[in-house]
Image 1 (cartoon, helix red, strand yellow):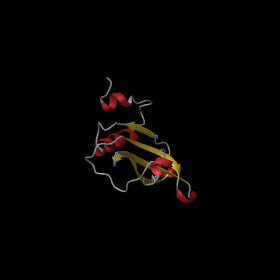
Image 2 (cartoon, rainbow, N blue to C red):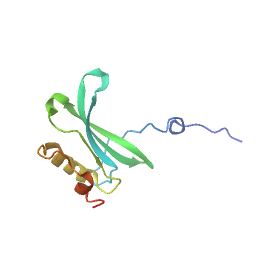
Image 3 (cartoon, helix red, strand yellow):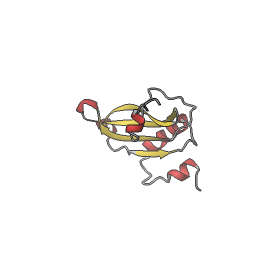
Length: 116
């Protein structure tokens, strides 16, 4: 009987694979704009993170939006989608949410049209 070969997925089920491209019309699990430490400890940057499905698993696409100094006073947010909205739709929602400083709280479920 052949010996079972263990994969990284079996050893580290919490590691999220990355993808270097996303298509505007593909369904997405969610979009996030958050501040995180940049690679090489070059300070904090704002990242737009989009989760899509690759090979049956959630994969992460990251776009570095630059130093957090450029984003002072701009909210960080998460938009869940669960494959209901496309990448382009979520990017449009992100553009609306990012610069809408008058609204203290956003009901994301209402914004996405779910669970109304």
